[in-house]
Amino acid sequence: MSDCIFCKIAAHEIPASIVLEDDEIIAFEDVNPQLPVHVLLIPKEHYANVGDAVPPELLGKLFSKVGEVARIKGVEESGYRIIANTGEDGRQTVHHLHVHVLGGAQMPIRMGPAD
Ligand code: 5GP
Ligand code: ZN
Image (tube, rainbow, N blue to C red):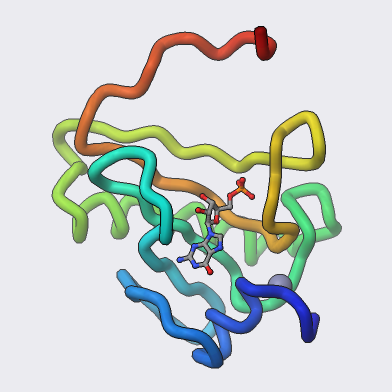
């Protein structure tokens, strides 16, 4: 997708602070971190979200990298949260499938509807 910012990051057309990368997957620091550790993990190929007919093998590969990101960022022991915001109610703003890996401090407990 030519106008997708994450496709451009995956293609190294715009810069990002890369945490790990292979042929299919890239993880990079979120430009606006919400916690001390905030990494985005994406497939290089464009899918809008987790429901966009993503091949199961690719989804497996994506999630299999979460632990590696946590190890690299030093939060394997302390723990972290993974989030995949999806669609409007999920407050997804970049419509290229991504998993947030958040840690380095405790997440808020609350996970209900917006006030
Ligand atoms: P969403 O709300 O779609 O789940 O999250 C999108 C995330 O992408 C946000 O946390 C936002 O800070 C991050 N983001 C948006 N544009 C860029 C960018 O150009 N570079 C990086 N590294 N992160 C971005
Ligand atoms: Zn894309």
